[in-house]
Length: 359
Image (tube, rainbow, N blue to C red; front, top):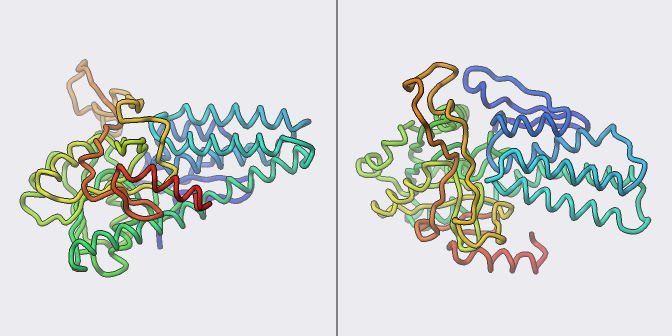
């Protein structure tokens, strides 16, 4: 059974506080968008899909018992709150994409006299509630296409894979993106072993991916971030699979810091490098990775672990949360809910699906 990181019913939202894992399992109650913003900013919830879902559901909870005199008042409230949620962590595009879709929906509902403010509010709430199951369905499709592609390129034989950060049930509504591919391989008994990084400085791999892999009883080994090259040299790795926080028009990808160096090492060792992400992670408004704003996190995340100092006092730090992997290093392809594509194919493929009404 997959971990449940997000618990929701109409008017009530709880999230698994990921700052406390793996030592403590505690669900945090989110009552409004202020709570949602803080949980995202403080990384009590993280992972691009989960950020968008929790952000939107925090708004849904706040809307549930709130009355609006007019449709315009409802529209203005929703747009203000969505803009606020996007500001919590700007590098990941999924929250911005969800906000844009939410604004488009509320503006459409406000046009004409078809709905009262209460009816429009309920329609928006239902749209946000549907994000949970939609995300799980998308993740399972990503898992299917990714596993199929990797196995086709390995004569259908069981494989060893390497992954980075956390991309499973804790980063999504359930199942996962890159970890969803790994989970699918396991379900088909085609997974030999998983190697995964600590993912310093926040240790999402050591704390969260390890937690999920143990929970799923998947054969896996934790490695330090600095061991990736040695791991590929010493062990037969058939694929590197990572997630993404934003993929831009030319296929450049923003993901957790350390992804770029993994892609370089993978190319040197002729290991296919895959990025697994939903369509909502694609941002055609930005031409290349140079246009992506990279979030810089506080120094204490590097210099302390659970409040214990591990670096010399007074030392300066540079702590980017993400890096950019150029498209030409994504040699395996980008795994989406519609299939596996080369980075340069992505824009055209998504446009085709939008024309067909599948996006």
